[in-house]
Length: 166
Image (cartoon, rainbow, N blue to C red):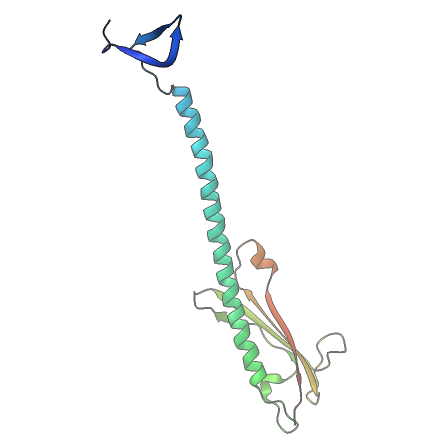
């Protein structure tokens, strides 16, 4: 036996002589080990893909919520800029519930805007009295066709008061 055909095993001696094994024996992974490794890798990749799809869905929901808040802010600023003094009251501040308005967001999503103006916030229901000096205004923006999930349960709503000025 020459050293070219024999492979030395590290640190293995028997009775003071080193033990050798033939070089034609090959070591490696068995088919079962490869299949198990592939299954473990597949499970890990599925977890990553599920996380990515969840993140995409969550971000799309946040995008539509941001658009709803921008539409809500625009409507509130419009109502706050309306005249409400002792001599002049803008018609937009007339008491009651307005018809629902369809508004398109920047991304093309459709939103529904509800506005109710209560001339007597201390009485239940929406009261109409154009001589009132205090108005409670409620603005709600919802997605016209929400996807299932938190978007259906959480509309964007703001409630504020206007007091007649001098």
